[in-house]
Image (cartoon, rainbow, N blue to C red; front, top):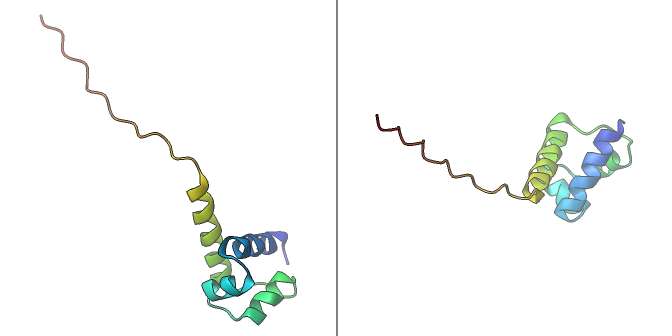
Length: 80
């Protein structure tokens, strides 16, 4: 199984607090998740994409917030 699947599933498990919680989040049995984490089977596309979403959302939430930018008023027209 490609390393990307394994790394994504491992990261997702760490984020949610373990394999049991990840299996619940992915809506799969713990035994299926275990096979995937051991590299014995490839996860379903649906489960893998759920894991990708979980990791992506977590990582985005960790980014520092950009300061809000208030648009400046347009320059005043010069009096003729």
